[in-house]
Image (cartoon, rainbow, N blue to C red; front, side, top):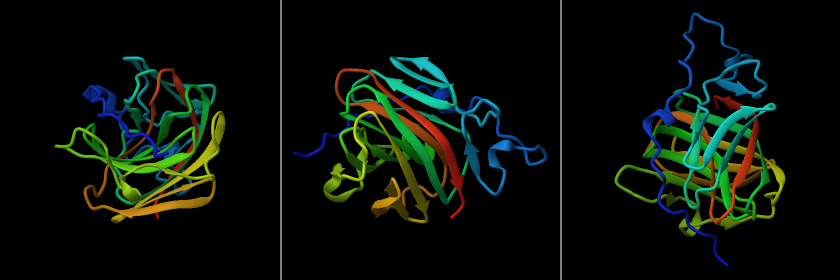
Length: 221
């Protein structure tokens, strides 16, 4: 049976796309990019890396208990948060744990985010599917870049209440997704050359999807 297709993206208010704090200038020390990282965050509260926290429209984004938590009960709509940075080529890794809610969901990583209408999104689901998608001005729905323009099943993905290590590569026109150390797919697209990074969650059936993100690391390739 084929995987579902996301409904039109919920266009968030512009303030949800803006960093909760300004990017630290080059003259100031920044714990968020030490040891050669473009961005690193263990969400311990010891550092503030700019993630927007909010409670709106049935979606909640909050940093608590050492993780970044995103929950949503809005069926078919993607909710996300950004770090307020600007990168071109990046490799992003993050641990993502579904803690409750329907397995018919989608969660993962954004790269080259320019605004709420233009970005790439790398998604896995609680029932074992994955996809790489693109939102672009002029299209009211996500465009899937994965084979057959749809979600693909993989046994590599830990299903249900479980943790998955997501690795995303946005280098030149190549966009790659790996999960739990194993490569799943590489596609090419030239729509966006740079932008912010982000984390997002959606539920595709009634219920509240809750996902915790931890140990985010953004490196140059």
